Length: 577
Figure 1 (cartoon, rainbow, N blue to C red):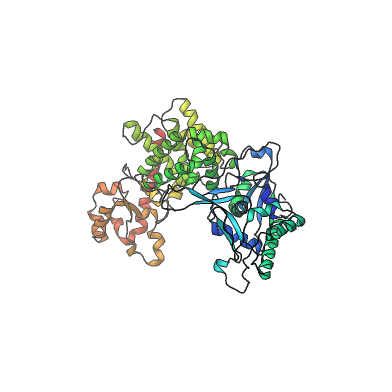
Figure 2 (cartoon, rainbow, N blue to C red):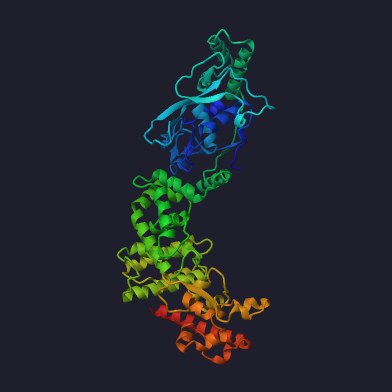
């Protein structure tokens, strides 16, 4: 087991170790607690409540080289980027806090630091007011059976400067308790503080004063309030997984969130978080079609396009690699946008793209051919190359060639593309890619097995539009909306035969206008008025005797023959270039 025995230590010892032994990994988000939350935490400490468990990671010197390590915030300033990089001696012990940052930072602020916030949120020019945590030692805590405002029993509050004391209030700066670790020291200190009380203080008030100060000291110096697990495994990806699980109770985290935090901490010329979030939004909402990409897709593409190791793990996002990605960022964005625009032009978008990984070879093709601004300008080369890419991608998606664990497929595909570029081959290298991928027992070709699987696709599936689009010589998928249509309408079929109605051999793609005109007519009238060119375009058998519903099975058999022929010819044409 990598977890050591469940441990515990008093609050004062842990707080004294913050920014000395205990630090934060780059994957931690900023401190976000409000003053009321800090007060609530100290109130819980005074009442003897457990603080829940913490999770620490004892990181060795070798593993430290992978991670950026940060200090805890002691003097928090609202709206200011807080955490500073920690300068750690190579031989020093370092323990990173995986779970418990907000609580530990709050304790540090109350016991050693300050909390600064602006006087007015409306006026951005207002300076922050620096405040320290105080405890009213004359305030009797609420008894358990008395409702206290927001559940707070003790008299904590934040003040700028030193608050005035009265015969009813004695404000004690909480951080002073750190100066008196032993019972003898706190005894003498308590005596000195009592001497400062006004003569009008009653015996009951004096008792409350002593109890409050003793309770505060005991909570910070005597009671083992911080209980934690200590992780010693140095596998960064395991730690990332633990971090995600440990923090799943709040705002959901993903591996990409954490890797993005690491990139943000190490990029120097760009804000990685802002750049990647904005780019994802552009791809999804500002291109010719709507897409559904995420941060993982972008970060994975960065590895592929930057010629780095492709596995999606922490060690591949080290400082050296992140520097390379940042330096290539503009070219990476351009290549991804070109590739997505091209794929969108095929009509492939958020509703039909079944594997984002299958786009990687296309994106890399643009990356190593930056001179190709677009493949949509419709020169003879553009038309041929776009057809190559469209047919290859469609086959790869229909065969699920990039599904599951596909890092090796991506690596080998990248090698092929780079080798072909070195040979000054400008065409998208379909044959070379297919040969390399087939060696990994994956298929990106239209063989007889693929065609059989093609004919098993049914209406309403994610890949149905993609499959149907291969049956047409159309180049404007991205700008014209098409409707999946049942050739023999579903209304002709009894409910128990809907599986027959939904077969791909009974489906076609129509423009919305064509579909509306078909719905306005009876099926017999519509199909008999379709001319031969329409029927050839939609692979509808010309034998009119098959248009009667009682000949449906024969119609399907004849159309499947036409579909097979179409797909065989398409693949042969692609191979021939």
